[in-house]
Amino acid sequence: INLNEFESNILRETVLHVASERNKKEIVKYLLKDKTVNVNAVAIYDKHSIHYSCSRGNEEITELFLKDERINPNVKDQW
Image 1: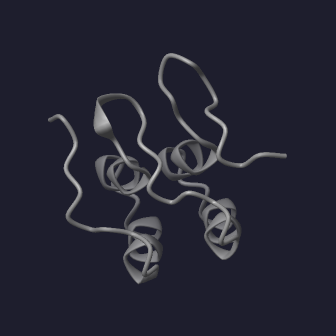
Image 2: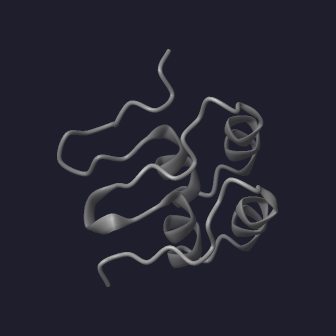
């Protein structure tokens, strides 16, 4: 399984994007442990997984991202 593949050609979301948006904390934790997962993959409108968790109010998942040294908390999307 390639965890960095996009779920859809239109939205360019990875499994991490979807788990972040849907508040699947355990899945996000699992994915963040895997160092081959691209935590900075960019979906449509330049959205990163951290944008998805923030926009949905998923504070616990956002905190997980902020603890991961690979995440850039200053990334900007198109909005």
